[in-house]
Image (cartoon, rainbow, N blue to C red; front, side, top):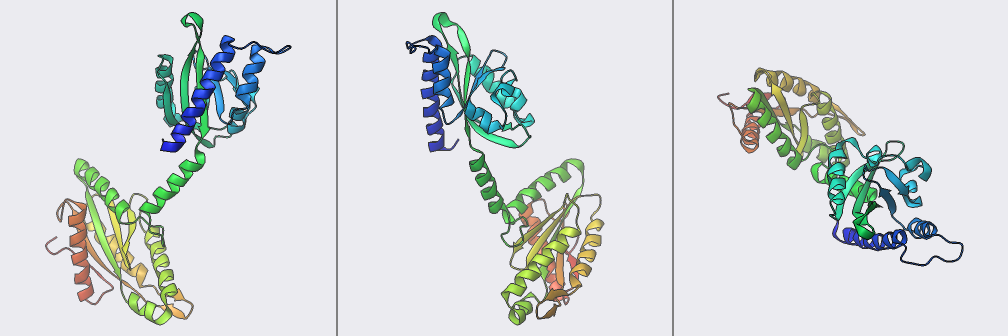
Length: 326
């Protein structure tokens, strides 16, 4: 929960808990022609947050206008349905736990992903409290719902940016290391292999010098597209930096499978790249290191694949080499 946002919703919730409790318990003499229920609806429907009043089985006894707007459903259609009708399937366990906790008299404040009528996600910040009347009689559980979908989308986008290369949108080093750790862990458990291919584009500096950096960026984008088109969904293509890429081949039955892929990638990137000033011949040098025989950690495998790539460079480029001794 974001600090100030959470405090604001908590404050609103406390006010509404008091208002609803007073209205339901009759702590105000109604005006002529006005019932306590009229007062309750007047105050709660004027709230800027969604309000649900739930019974012991989590059925919705009352929903205010704001709740109906948030879920894009009429209030009379919402009333009578269970809370869990609107809960995202993956969040049901959390919703059940927090509802039971509030029924035990605990005030709850948490984030929850719900679903609108059309199935679209709706992230809310929930403040819940059990309402108790005179003599300890339970009147229901009040949920105050604040829409935080915009904030969640900003967080998702920000997280995407921290894990992706801004030019190619490929995984960056941080995400690459994370995936390598997972791939190595699975390979260790199931006695499989992971191959790390370290790629460096040949003659990329000449492209920048002759055609400009914009042309260089287009070559990088096209190289990323070609690489991604030739690997499986379970594999990873990452931009390591500059004109360097890393391809991680996971769940291999034998190390020899990496040679087949590397040969195909050399041929693929040997095809000229189209540029505004003419075709750009580039090519690629690739180094290979394989788990477990060449290393057991991401850093060790990358280091050896990088060293093997330089052997390919020394051989004239446009080829691949494995880590010596592998």
